[in-house]
Image (cartoon, rainbow, N blue to C red; front, side):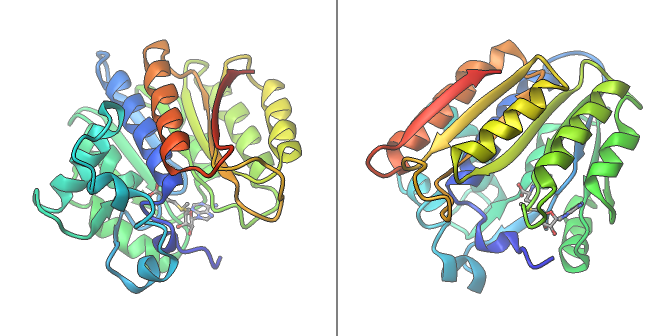
Length: 273
Ligand SMILES: C[S@@+](CC[C@H](N)C(=O)[O-])C[C@H]1O[C@@H](n2cnc3c(N)ncnc32)[C@H](O)[C@@H]1O
């Protein structure tokens, strides 16, 4: 496991994932009854964009850095920018929240948050990050297995799946986990992140998802035409059970990011399988 999210925190992909995450959380916590959020690949919890890894990649500067420099942030990205500013005490600090802080900050005391992480160093940071939240628990274990085991226990289920794609079976694991979670709670909401390199891989994944659900929504953020499969040409969020009320935010966030952070030929493609 070589992947370190600190190289990528606050990049275009985090902006799409985290803006959509906040929109889903807002809709799901507007409903009565406890919500159980399982974050299968939680990472460290928060990142210092002034640190060596972030500076070396330059990805945050091209992502959240550009948003923070804007006078008029688009409304759909305003909740994420507000969360970044809040983490920095309202000032211009260099901290960026990972999914654990965004989720913990969006939940009510009656909800539950389970954050999974396998890497020991990331896990230590994750445990410290979620410690102040009584409803949160950090688990040093496999996120796919944990989601399948916990879904349907204690309230409505929301699963965020955000693997590093170091393993060749991550796409298959997402499909299998979706199937296992829906078997436990057919109303579960699931959101999975993935890179977009070539269309064949993504299409094959979506065809596999269609075998386990008829309610998949794909939000493709193509930074450039998908012609070079060796490059990360964009990313996608694929959601199951996303509330209808969130579709406008999902579309607006993805469209804005493609239009403003993409190359010539960038586009957003939002579609239902
Ligand atoms: C893309 S990062 C997570 C970023 C985080 N979701 C966020 O938005 O801030 C993926 C993380 O998953 C961890 N990981 C890899 N395989 C895992 C597994 N099977 N179960 C739990 N965590 C895993 C990696 O160590 C890495 O920290």
